[in-house]
Length: 229
Image 1 (cartoon, rainbow, N blue to C red):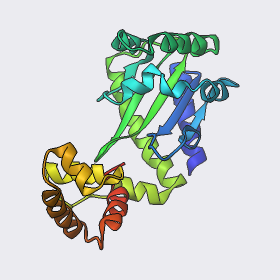
Image 2 (image 1 turned 180 degrees about the horizontal axis):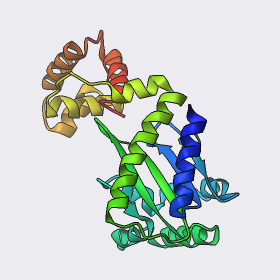
Image 3 (image 1 turned 45 degrees about the vertical axis):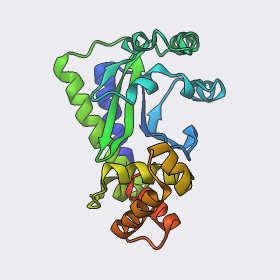
């Protein structure tokens, strides 16, 4: 069960010398950050500080995560945001984290069929992982994520692992994403540089492929399949 899985994982972390960890679901626009933790152990008060100071908007490790294909070290992320207007707040956050016992750490992305679905963050004292150990934790992050999502939320697990056999063209995907943002045919046409008649034609094709009754139904199905988020 869930408890044995996390206990076993925590023993492994103790062996490597990591004091803290968090396993997260990827943030979706409709969710607040407080519902994302699947399992974890952080310094006392740090999660509250993180939320209160709204660090999720500037956290360089979280921003870096969106582009990462494999695990990376926390301290290597700041360099990627030298030109960012949020640079000062990022640095302040990292100093704050150090004061809370999070001196350095690693982040491992978890990818599903449609991109980033979660992440595993390990931290505390600076620890040097050797080459193969990073790959080991990449694999562990994936297995742990699926085990805990399955235990906590079987519906989400099914949705994330479902094979989508709906083949939409690039144009249809663009139109669908804009529709999900609440745009009309006229708006979508303007953004894509096509007539609203052409947009309607795309929409009919999308509804047919998704087996949807209307546009609202198409959006609902697309969310369920993870085609839009």
